[in-house]
Picture 1 (cartoon, rainbow, N blue to C red):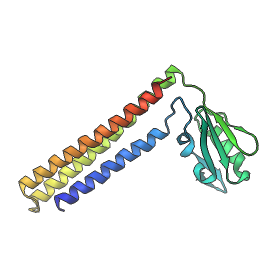
Picture 2: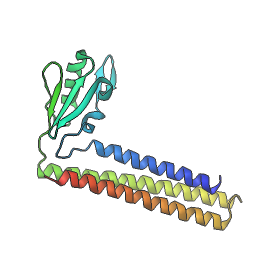
Picture 3: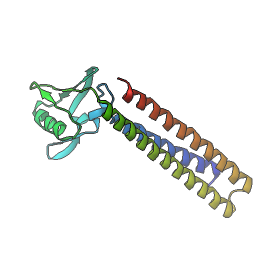
Picture 4: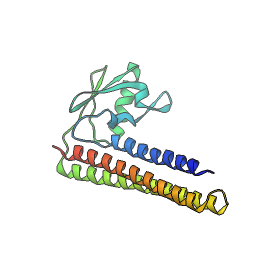
Length: 186
């Protein structure tokens, strides 16, 4: 495997780790309403768990309210049950056509817990990125010992992998800081 392929594979895998982290952050509550809070929710309807996005239009018309408009009015009760059972602490209110979810303000204790969870997720993402670096370095060593890469090429490849690692770890750190500041603001 040429050095370029090792680098390309490492970069793709690091991007995936950052994307997983970014997606995990959308499920963390801040002080304002965000449709991402319920996007990952599965609703038991038509005999199978279905993502809420496939059943309804989810929006946040006000900073403290999420509105769920089902495409099929027959799924309204199922969506409402799923929201109540989700463990997100929401109390959905239905008027027969739409479901409104009022997002209560976060207490200082909940904000600290959310901040700690963001740090945990960021560390998991950094570990995933470092694992990719380890795998790429191992691949470079294997190619060098197999005679496919020179010692200088292997060293250059490892340096470029380290640069990719720093870049992606910085990105994770920036995303975490941004989300943490959103959570901590009143």
